[in-house]
Image 1 (cartoon, helix red, strand yellow):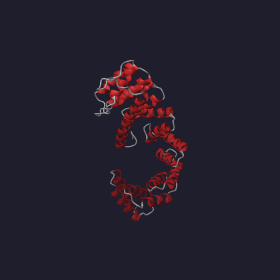
Image 2 (cartoon, helix red, strand yellow):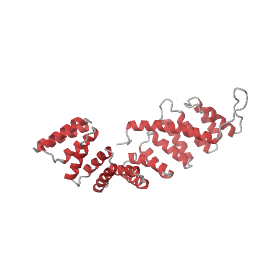
Image 3 (tube, one colour):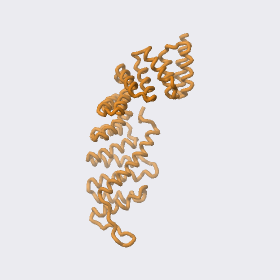
Image 4 (cartoon, helix red, strand yellow):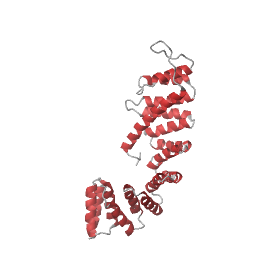
Length: 306
């Protein structure tokens, strides 16, 4: 019987690795027919069941933890199955047990961070994410989540530190550089902000995206009250501006530099936008850019490196 069970495990794992979850579940169930208490087959059956939205998935994994209460992997996958079923409280308990057994299971720790955040325990959630980020590679989902959480809590320096780590680990990732650029701008580190926006301009070759890094660079120069460089950037953005923002930007910069506002069709000077209006417009442009980059990152998967 041993060779038959071994063969079932090999086939179930092979189908799982090939993302053929129906075949993986079938092979695992076939093996469980002769070895109903085989923990590895139960775990594979549970994981495949989660992918197939099977009502039996939690049962297979719960049985695995009953048979092997010290198996960290079984607890981890039980937590994922429970979370997929919407049972957040029991999922959290399973993840806690997984971490007790394997303190370096950064994915389980990350799950604990997200469940704590979902329950409104923000400081606890951030603590778990920070712990997971320390264990994992710099561009893990925990590190990415940590940037967003620190930013939402107003801890911009901490968010910037994490964003730098991600950008250093994945120097081609545009969202990471946008995080560095915006957080540097927010914390008054204007040279770094300008450099990060310039890096974004080099990286992003998607047609129609050229204006977005320029808008960020304009923000930096406005923060420095450097009207001539800001005007040069506005001129560069004018030909490729997807939002039609350049006319108002040019009028604002020209007025700040001591020039005249532009005439309208009736020959009367049109009032330049206020600084507040300009800030809102530029922030909206970068928010649009962030949404585009976030969609692209989502398509490529949560973690940026394996």
